[in-house]
Length: 202
Image (cartoon, rainbow, N blue to C red; front, top):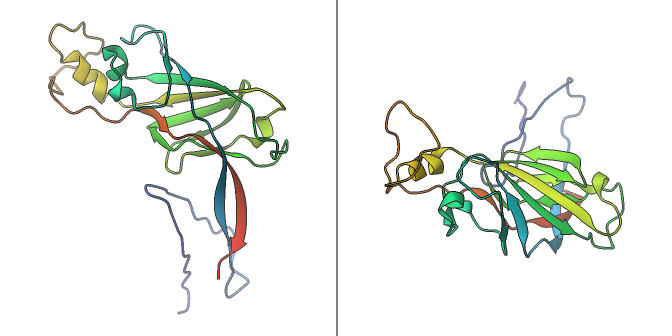
């Protein structure tokens, strides 16, 4: 059909992309390589999670494994709203070469993540798949990963509705009841290091 452009796309759940046509087409058709990702290491084990002051949560906590903040036994963490910072040391696999793309797949994030490696900002992720290229920032041996995650306000509002709780937020009208369901919150994971390959679609 004349004056029609068809772009087949394969997207992950909740993923979105921008498709931009900068110039007039010179070809009748074009195949774009399909991207696939291979997990070469999963960052399991303990994470240190830090919280800002005066938000009801402790200054820091150790999570032996990643879990949603709203599932914590600590009420301050369970109802936390704001930016939590997750920190972990790790050593990249030997097959990783400095400067080459190496993707950090964060798994599930609620809601936004900002990733730093060895004190350098690697990028942000705000939709699925939550994936950032950390390859240019890695060094041999031990590296330090820091992930800032911002969540929604809902859980703190529910926390403030609990009987006898010192309120941290303020609203002009009642919002959530004490028995309202908490939302999944924070860095949920699993967090993986991945390499990328590209193959032409058939």
